[in-house]
Image (cartoon, rainbow, N blue to C red; front, top):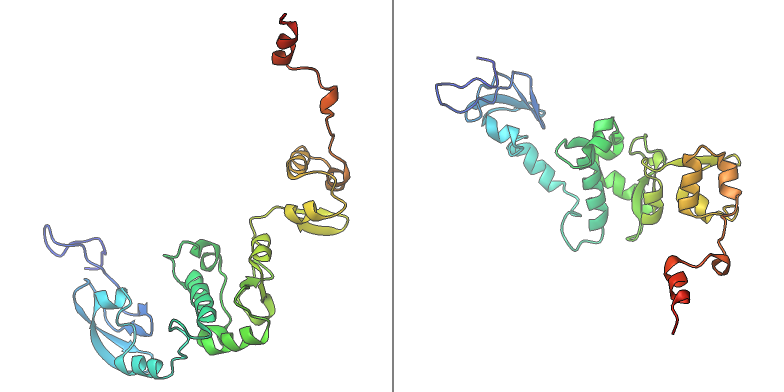
Length: 241
């Protein structure tokens, strides 16, 4: 039976079918797995074969053989432990990989789901990423940012910036081109050529005004002294003592 939704017997649990060749971490199935609780033959990338409970492969508990697991622990960098000097670099690296590889991550659709990847050098070695970080201006106050939001995580496209700069580089920001420059609205509001506020600039651009004109036209200031009295003030003037 090969239907993943077919039950083994009436009223029985649904099967978790996976065909031979399915990859789970470092292991690949050598035979069909028709339910979650069965022992299935698989091969680790080192060549060792073993029978493993299918559900443990699916949940990530046994996705490499014991020998490979031991080797990984022996060669561990140690930065994953709390209190170590480079703990934050490791957390940044771990979180970046999760956004790229784990479909269950909240932001996966903005990263791995869009085809963004991490270069082989970093993906295969956290130590390589750590060395790049320490040699390229990393401090505890900075965050990892990609220069091109559509580009991959790689040395030529990554930098360490403040959280403010990170927020401004998000792909969701509207970018405005004027005077031969392209900036987000927050940057234009800080430009000395801008003579209006956010509300005015948003309204003008929304009405189709030329960006340069929208930025440089001063906002109209209302003189409160010249305003007509409100209905309440006018009614007060009519009241006789």
